[in-house]
Length: 133
Image 1 (cartoon, rainbow, N blue to C red):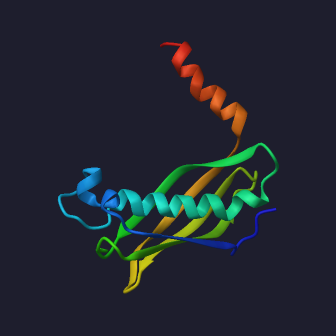
Image 2 (spheres, rainbow, N blue to C red):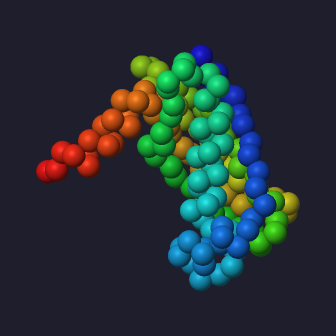
């Protein structure tokens, strides 16, 4: 069972490959927004995965985020996801997501993940290769 209030934090040191310039989302060598959002999603996934049955996983279906401050290469970034709700049917999980560096908050937002059966999800995805429109 997924508990409201459960949280999980991950951290990474910003590398040159994680910059806005490297990903193409900006021209500067600062921590890129797509990487911040990916870290937020990763924290949310890791937060609930231990509570899911074998063969189940989650996929991100919605994310709203603000990137509030820059982070230089070499500094550590932390992303935290906190469960704020579970849908009535138990298939959607909502999170408060936050990111910070050694100087303080750098991002915040909300994220929603759907619980899926891994095999069925991959089968549906891969059918796009064989079943053309």
